[in-house]
Image (cartoon, rainbow, N blue to C red; front, side):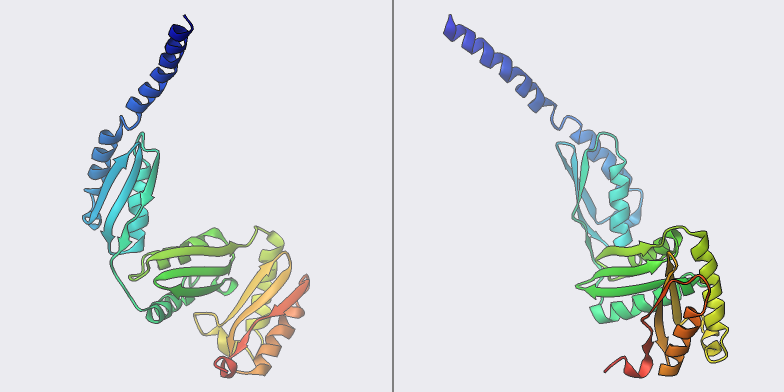
Amino acid sequence: MKSIAMWMLLLALALPVSAQQKSEGRYDQQIRAKASEELGKRDKFKGVTATVEDGIVTLTGNVELYIDKVDAEKRVRKIQNADGVRNRIEVASSVHDEILRDQLSDKLRYDRIGYGIVFNNLTLSVENGVATVAGKVRDYPDRDSAIAIVETTPGVKDVIDEIEVAPTSINDDRLRIALARSIYGNSALQKYAIDPQAPIRIVVENGNVELHGVVTSKLDKQVAYTQASSVPGVFSVKNNIVVASEMNR
């Protein structure tokens, strides 16, 4: 009787496991068909293949731009019953790191002209096609615009977003305007005001100011610091401005 009872117990335990095994992957064919349908709607995905195992979609193949790789994953993640996505798509386009860095730097310097780019400061590095964007910006549209530029540039294999967005602050907004007027309105620094890329960048967070950019002389660097320090409400000023003649030393 004990043997029969033990056998019945083992059978009872095995049945749910067996049922679970049968249920695993029961939507795989449906998910794969839907993924192929979604990817087939865009020519940019013609080199991408989707396979499915136990609800997990694996994307492989090639695309021309990194943004296409991101887009493919976003579309597949929306498929009903898909439990996850492994994105193994590779970006086909290739550009030398130094050339790619210069291209991205030029684009980022002039990004958001007319939207207060003077209050953003970004740094960029590129290694094996992987672009890392860091620094500080005033708001999320500024951050999103910068990342979009990098994602849509040929040769970028991956993007690491380390950009910090300043907290919303009415007082900081007031300081930004006052600082820009004080610095760019100074007679010694007005020559920089006509440059659309805003050579002197002003980063403000909780009343603390950081100055970034490139100027032509040590005097201009000092004047910028003095002008920023004279603005009422500024708690501290960190002068990170670089003099052009000292950049390659």
